[in-house]
Image: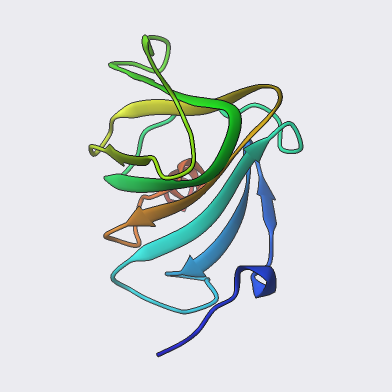
Length: 130
């Protein structure tokens, strides 16, 4: 068993969020079968672009004035769900979504994938450019 403390994981600023890679490729604990990361969405990282990717489960650890939008297309995200600690979101593969927040708001979450490939927009773009 490997024990990982969030405070010991490097915080990686990405467009729209700060990512801490806990389990998976290039993570605090290596795995070729699963990916688990901490994510923080706030004004510090700027707005997130709507995106889709592999099937994902997101556990909300804490949130203030934060929500997620989802829908059938990048520019059509009509469903809004306000977030609070303890909410679990299960996104289907390629389901369009975006995390957002209002003035002074934030979302702190754990993101879980049952795979290590094509799980983040940046990873998908990097793979396409290889």
